[in-house]
Image (cartoon, rainbow, N blue to C red):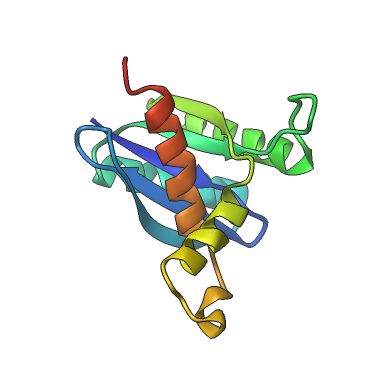
Length: 138
């Protein structure tokens, strides 16, 4: 039972995939943002190719638990994905995942010169791992 996670961004979209037991998340790839319909079709195709049974969409929320501007953009992408596939698409709070992705690179000993750049697929893996951990007893 693989699950695909999406970390949506204005320029790039990070993807992560769980192992078949839906226990461990791993970074998959980064897509360059094109347009919402094209991005949605690509994500749906990747989910199908990887035999995912669900798509988890990262969504940023404010301190009151309401979607931010980016969170509303993520919800629109999720709606577009739902039009492309019958797989369930579930929204999941992505709070702090980009900062955690940078910290993970530091913890792994990456030199400062290699810490820049895109954290999107690692952020997607952190979103997915948070989701998997929260649903581990289901």
